Length: 459
Image (cartoon, rainbow, N blue to C red; front, side, top):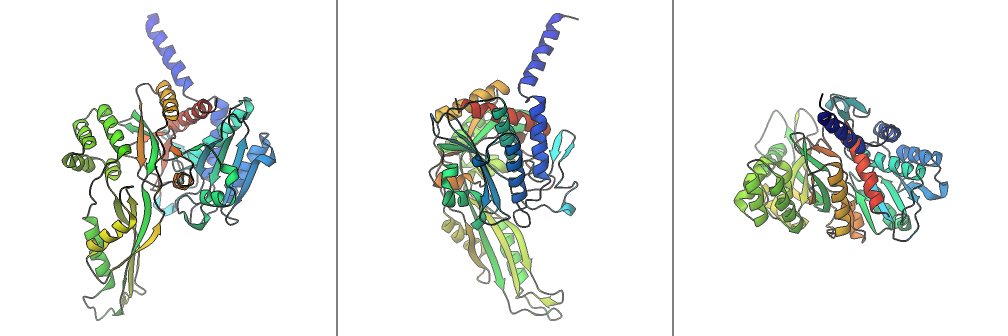
């Protein structure tokens, strides 16, 4: 056998080893991950406190002083955990944020147990494997590794694992910490979820960095009716009114808009894309409405990046099987572009509903947040480490189409950058859905990426 192929094989093996954490750190991250996944921390029915307490105990066992660990929150079952790793203090602290609550998951909806970490066919399955317990587990595993290796950063590193990101409201951990314990998380800037690596046909194409995000808003569509006996039906039926309104909504689309961040994203994607969409992506960046329509039809994520979206997510109605309904209602969840306002969306929904029997009201408005600045030092560090681990993969600034706790921090004057280094298939993102999963290799490579990134930003 020629020595040349052997050398190539050896070089590839060394490269593969470089992007994976040491075995002991892989085991630690997996152990923390499993512990978090099996804890039922659903926004509505669960509790984040067991996770917060378990993390605190693990950190103390690893040698972190109790005085550097805080556990607490708005109510007993909505605890957050904050830990500080001391540096030289030459620069302001760096906040490493992740949330430990999850979207609810019903066992009967899934093909696997959502609250058991299952490794199968190259994936980790379980509620929160993507959103957001992977990053939470990695932050803790890496922090313990820094301590073991006696790493001395030039700034304090603060890890905050928080409650109620998925639903916000009065128990949201970041909001509560900012209002009640701000000194614990005061920092120059934060790293958070919101940006992930994109794969297309199994190939890594971009490592996205979220600089801004849409506004989260819920609207209630409600029909009240006098009802009556089901044996004497009439056309004036609350469910029919609501059904008609939702059907009209299903056929409606908000206009396309792009901004500074999304324009940069589409410009970069036009250079990366190898398929028939490449030319259209370039035209999107130039403002072509026709190109936007073509790209939107081909890619739901890109569609969401170009327009405000609204979709029905919950239904309620009727009070008996043998009675005409006196109430029919739906929750409509909207993700609003920074250029649009929630009031504008409310006005648009009322026009779309086109039925005075259907009341449309704002249920939740989390408010706008400013975009984080395009800091060259941060983006260069992300790009350098990303290119070392995944040659040819481009670092892309993006606008997150979903919401995150970065909104609270940006409003409070703490710029936040959504970056993870976990690569998933662009068209198979299962966060919030059935059989949520994370590629096993992506989890461990993301562990290395975040380990190296935090070091690079702290020395």
